Image (cartoon, rainbow, N blue to C red):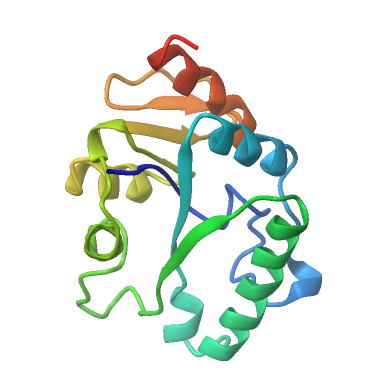
Length: 175
């Protein structure tokens, strides 16, 4: 059976983006993240995180630093009874020609390789246009841009927060 997935960007969607967040003490969850993720699970979605981490490629922090922070994040989700299916990350510098850095779709392709995913009923939620472009490149039709501005766009929904994005998802499924 194919999984419906909510693909979430990390910095700016799950946690506040202070730029190259790599230490637990600088990792602050965005308001409403746990409530939104619980609701996604209640709607029979799985949650997958896809995140560019160019700070690794730039030498600002190591893969081990990233893994330590990721384990902390996953443990905080587990405390709230939220299971994250998997975390995919691109460690490359933007100047490297890799296939995984968003807006390229390498992380999504990797997830498709690992799991049976129903892309037509999956969503990608990010805070940058590169996230939206990644969804387009991966043929994910449902896209949400987290942005404080109340913009309208025919290619994606705009929500003020992850929790706010629930209304679009519920509308699509008439819940």
